[in-house]
Length: 269
Image (cartoon, rainbow, N blue to C red; front, side):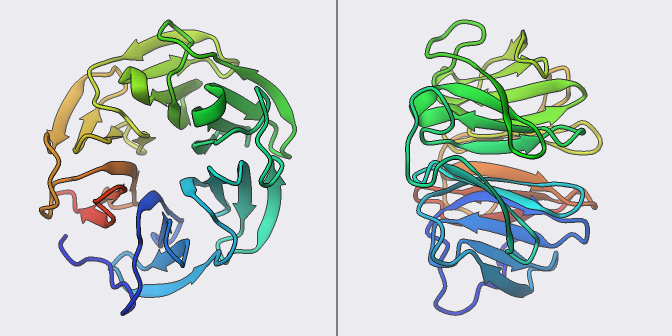
């Protein structure tokens, strides 16, 4: 939908790094502009913003069943948990301090398991995945640099569903699949720098690929459709898709970075 989002006059996203949708279909756009979290109604009406002055490089977001929003700031080496109104509830990681091997060194994304366990892809500096308790206690980590099973070259996005942990291994152009304890299960290949993935209630997988494409798959890894192929700023196509999320009606939201700098909404027909 062209012009879906009613961004206030004079405001810019700079880059849209994350997007989530709450239980009332309100859309939270995590971006790298002056207003890091911009909130809309599902029709694109502007609600408000929060997070000003906190973020340095907004990078990934997730929302739980209580509408708590988890946000990764890559350059501040931290994961924050907020209420839907922007009240800070929890901090994981040492703000502005990079860690070698341990959390975090330029983290990228966050996802939750059904039991509230928190998984974070620690991509740029550590090439690892960390699992935390719901209270933020580090339980264990896995991964190392490389191209083999269980190795990563920039784990950039993460999702948990059906007892499996899916990791967008961006520079290896694949999605790796693990048990909740980090045991390698399988992988899907053929992507163009997959940045993230999200899975809707029907088990449809959406993979934004940095090279101008969004792939849609089932849970067996079979490609159902692809939108875009080469980078384009035209509406309905993509320059650099970085994140996806769906709402209760099946509409798909895609945020873009680099020269994309926008959020697009696709309505299911």
